[in-house]
Length: 254
Image (cartoon, rainbow, N blue to C red; front, side, top):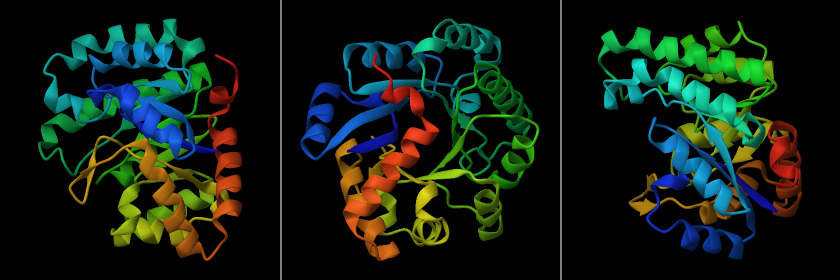
């Protein structure tokens, strides 16, 4: 069984088609992560409609740029997460971004939201799906202040020394279809032991001009097997075990 642990299901025009295509190649479960204030409720609706989709709610760091009212709306999102906590498998997508967000005046608000999300994950005893682009050091420093069941860093492409620190701390790393062409993602796969790797599409982000979908994680698995020089079946079984460890709620009956 293959599981996509990080996908923006609310951004597809036809979620049903995407889910069916994924199922045909063995992707049986998909974690749908929220980003914006508006996406929270839509993620819940999709997960309620499809048995194979599991919701993760949280505020993406780019929301500070996209939504001028985000600070005022933060408590609304937190209330929504709290009231739906029994249905959630994780808090995400959350984090910091100093790569795509260049305006440093927005960084304090990013940090405020990130800390609120981490506090919530700690309180609800939920794992987190993290975005860390360009802010890896600050994120790693911040995480030491919280006790969170499990930490997954999605699409890591930061400094090697921090990758090694994350490995030492036992973080998990989800690998996108970018592994087929990105030296940074290939390095992550090479450095991280198989027992801390996960699979993700980050769809509908485009990879080499092609819209990402959960079905693509089968190709990710194959690429990992090449890099690790391991049997694909063995890797699939191990990553399934990893996913059960990080996101146990998606294996409970809905």
